[in-house]
Image (cartoon, rainbow, N blue to C red; front, top):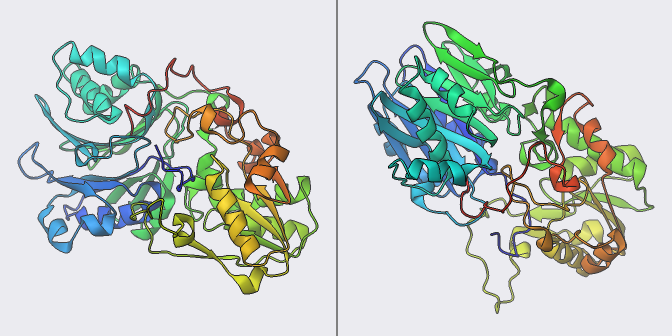
Length: 477
């Protein structure tokens, strides 16, 4: 699990796929795509490529722990020759932080080779895994992505095509998944029927892209074509361009996108299913100002995720927006945490208040969420020590009351500060003069009232039956 010093939610992964129909190498393009998706996972990363004109089934791959720019050198990329490829950035929810679990997974089997990158979490991974093990499967990793890869390979033996095998596997796997699959001559994207995780298509000249977010398409100079629909399988090949299978697509009202993509996970310059992430965050701040006003001198955001909502609060309330903190941009999630006995706070290593901005002022501080509360109380304390007269906190999501099983590391209920506590009690614990959260009724409005969203971590009502036991620590992404 996360350490108490790191009280932010984590997304689990980012996926990126490229197929250059002109036959040029794609590894460096995948590298830049992954750099743009680095916020979705900083634990490990990988690239797998294949030459569609070379020997069928030969895949070159490289993966390692750490950040994209640490894991790949120009020499690494130079060796990865191929015109089709997939890439992945990963964050694991608990345990399983090993090189073996880095993706993409590369699977050699009777029909050739598959490269697979997965974002999400399967809720029936343990049963599927046991079923495979009892028929002789040997697993190299502890991640549910390998279960998906095995099922696709198995189904391929009785299918006319890889995309048909992906479709058949989708009838067995349950949970959240955006997949990018590389076969010897095709690039395939698939999104679970609820659409928990984002996936979109891009194009640049004769090169096609699949990406978790549109910001990565911008980075590589590709134009956005469209989102992959929840439940859709897209197949990209030079012969047929983009083919679509919508046989798993649900009615729009039954879809359930993770609302945290809009509140926190995605980069603000991305669009997901037609909705601007930046606009959603500005709107969240405006709603907080409407529903939970307070008399103050300054509105600040907890960088980076609270900044847009803080701007929205300022626009709506007329209270000036200011920069209250400096964030050390060079501290990754993997930095060596100060020992308990040492006086350095890991929060202060990452963030420092600007005394000149907050001294003597009544401050409204906006953040995207409070999970355990261990970071919030330190940030409030830092503001008071910097001379803030009052600290009022506003949160651009409702209180977490339930765990997430679909790829976000909301922990068990007894670790959630909001569980069994009133807002006033939470405010007292973290030391604010006042505290309020985004109203749950506002969530649909963040996405224009036209997209199905998952609110399970706030309401306990999930789009599908959650697993009887919390298996997230064993089968992570």
